[in-house]
Image 1 (cartoon, rainbow, N blue to C red):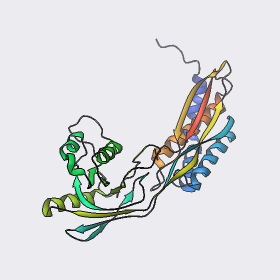
Image 2: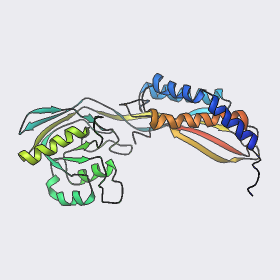
Image 3: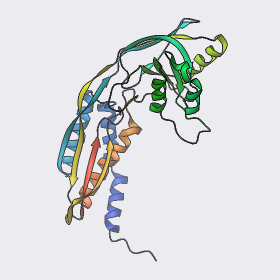
Image 4: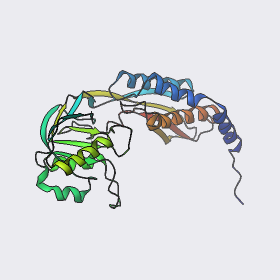
Length: 296
């Protein structure tokens, strides 16, 4: 027989409140509609951090505050990708975070799925060329191959630029960082699945394909903020349970699922614990909203 839950009444109150309250949806709406993507380095990132901090304070948490830190900032500039041989055509592309400003004209080469074996097979052929790889992981490798791994293998192979092809039809280019907290050494952009398949067919049918890639992105030092607030424990306040999520999104969408849905769950947990269990916590519960996760 399972032991009786000594906190059953509180649990029932918390669950009932969550299921009948609009707070979590209201907070999600504010984060997405009022502050957009909350991309690192934008005014909306700071406004979102202030909102989260003010909400923690309004819900009764203690010492709600912003903690600043320096990071390698990046701003998206216009990017253009043109086929110049064997035909002339412009393709839509977007720079990937930490892409540098650059101007590259080179022959295109494909790394397929971007598996270690495919890169090994290319070898010296990557030198000076624009390397293209799909975002999907190799189906028979048995592990995920991250975008950054594909990019780094291209850099190590001597590529002049990198093109990342979305694996999802009908949704346009993907985004995601090329580096962790530093400018990337060569330009990297993303294109949609359909344009990636077109380039693959063009190479198969016509042989040599030459591209011109131009990027205008800005890399510069910046400051971001983590949001911190506590529900102090009554018996062992120096021992902590930490609950957190990042609040920044990528700049091409509102980031409602990743990360805003997670951030508002952290905020909601703070609300109901403060309301129903704030005086009964043995250990401190610290709530965190992290900045700059998406940019890397």
